[in-house]
Image (cartoon, rainbow, N blue to C red; front, side, top):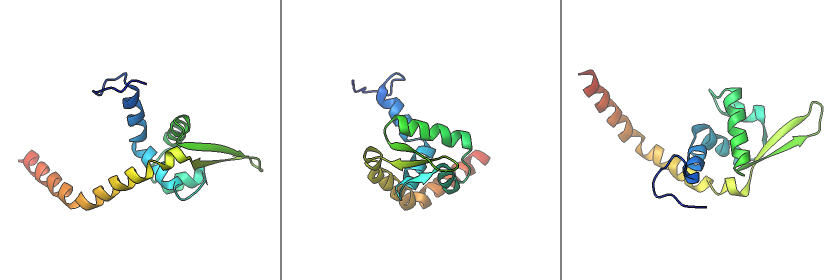
Amino acid sequence: MPVCQQFDVNCPSRLLFDQIADKWSMMVLSVLDAGPMRFNGIKRHLEGVTQKALTQCLRRLERNGLISRRVIMSSPIGVEYAITPLGRSLQLPFKALYAWTLEHLDEVEQARQAFDGRADA
């Protein structure tokens, strides 16, 4: 697979980056870090996600090999999602990004207020 030096629209790495950096993808992988979960369990952890957006996100993550989907033969039939070893390999970078967010939140908020103040003037 070729490595693109720029963010060309047809570059496979750009498509993958777009899919794993999506806010719902990052949150779903974080939720599944605790263990396998059914659709509604995941949805309860993600305030504001629609059923359609979560379904699309889970399909993308499964297609990319980051989560697995297992049908549970019960009454009614259920589906359980789990993070794969490949998906788990993203946890360290995601945790680092989350730590950065917490560490710099005050600075970002100050920058936002300064920007908004200039925009209002």
